[in-house]
Amino acid sequence: MLTTSELHDIAKKAEHIFARYGLACCLTGGVACQLYGTTRLPNDVDLVVLTTTYQQEELKRMLVKADPQFYLVSSKDPYATYKVLWYRFGTIYSGFARRCKVDLLAPGIMNIPDVPKRYIETIGGLPAMPLMLLLFMKLQARTDHRDSPKDFMHPKQWSDVFDINQLLDIASCRGETIREKTKWMPQSFVDAALSRIREYIANIPESKSKWRAIGYDGVQSMPSGASSRHTTTEQKAYQTLLSRAAVRTWQQSVHGLDDL
Image (cartoon, rainbow, N blue to C red; front, side, top):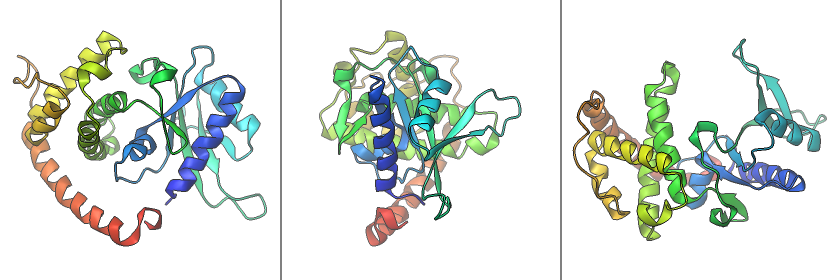
């Protein structure tokens, strides 16, 4: 298990390397969620590089060229044309027993909008994706994981649900509202997020008050023709998730985040 400080060190190294090329970036995924205050432990680094000039593979090579701790391996998919980026701990003398996967994204990939630099938040010296955008990306991830044709992806939706509900509480405490925090986002992106919110509330009714707290008032029933086949199953699974989360929170309070 990687510690929080190790994940942050990787992110800082990548940020500094990209800065040499004049490129800004921001964290997304689990590390960004944790920076805002969620409690689930991330296990990799997801970084959005704000560029339309360089492709993903070029960005990966920038890191590898600048720091030998970053390295590339072939994808397990024999038809893939991309390489997978990793960061290794240790030295050639001590052995590279531990490593961390690093995902580099850019605007347009996974529908990520181009983030104006003024909206990037610096938390603990690290650049974080704006909270409302992070919440919307988590909503998208949850749907993608649930509907994936790959069975091993399905359980990941519950990690997303856990993060989403904590992010909702955090956004509410910060006084953030959807209307104010989405003004810069493309309307098509916001519309897609609102549709996912409606479905999320239908699947997990317990979250309704959380969405209202950040200004969501479209709490009507699912649109005509929309699928609700997941609703009952997801409600039961969510209750199970809450029970497990309570145990996990107790474990973390006893052992500390970096000891797990």
